[in-house]
Image (cartoon, rainbow, N blue to C red; front, side, top):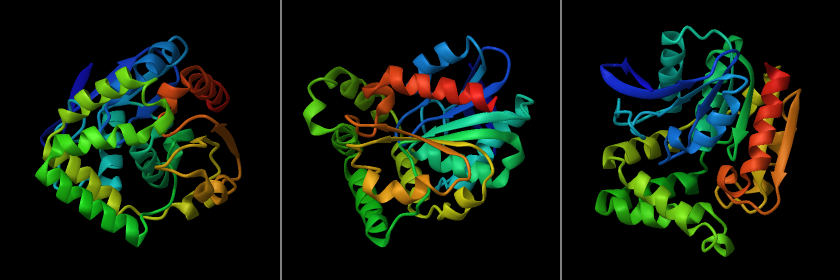
Length: 263
């Protein structure tokens, strides 16, 4: 566990194992803690770097708006500090948006990447308006927003099954500053369309998607999975947005196997 400085702000990361490198990026309101099980298992064969994106976990905010471009620069700075030249990158949700931006800026550093319940499309006008509404809610009652948002990442029918995990995620997410939550929302609201990047990339891409994911609905994403020259798709039939919790073995094996092929 260590920190680097980015624009005089502290950025937290973990670095486990030896060998070829896997970089793992968490989603909105999460932290590098979500990858603990993955990092423990993968570090038996690989070097695994997990980063707390600015405003999340133990990392400080670095701006009022955390654009995907800025977050990709943070990731690049961590990898440069660690003298990592090549890696495979996996991003959950927000982390996937950052991964796409990184792939556009530094394709020569990647051997492949994973979009884990994430996608290449920008916010629609309605989604941007919803972001603004959410920012208003966060300003009024950050904890109330978090307590409503986290359960919505899971299908309603499994809320009781994952009650402990949901409660833990709510506690962890509630530690985020109001500024960190809003900076991420503002950044996601203006993220670019990365469809052309996926169409142009020669890198292998793994898509992990949940059939019951209300945040990244499969009906919207069918066109995306055919864009890359080399792609593989894992569809989790009974999962929502949180496959690393809802299908831990299946998703871990998919990441591990993809890393073996890429690295």
